[in-house]
Length: 168
Image 1 (cartoon, one colour):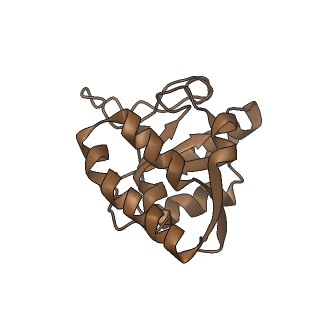
Image 2 (cartoon, helix red, strand yellow):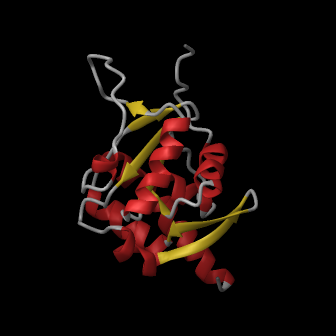
Image 3 (cartoon, one colour):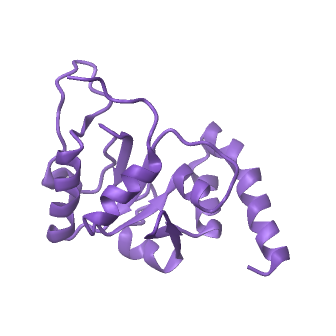
């Protein structure tokens, strides 16, 4: 069995999710990348719709990608379940294409339905992706307050300001 990669093949992960018709919103560092912010991310964070049908599609993708929990010190290769994906927590997974973190909702209780009005559609590699908009991403990163979020904030704000100057 080959070891899982430590870097995410962002395009391949997004393509797998899109091909399976998983309803999700890209958040976190990957959202910044898709908005053209000059940052690097090690994982793909998504907030997925938690309907039974969508959870089943997401679980199918995760199964195909040999997803296991990343922070299992006993190395039991624990796998995600439909129950966990339908819950409220955050799953930190390793897949054959790199780290993927399905977030049932963000820390402040924002799930797919709540975030949907705060998204933009971005076309990437011929896939139409829902991505959290920059103002909401800035607000989320500000509330999170982690060091890595504080470091990203000036780049997010500068990108938003530059877009404003260009009229879009």
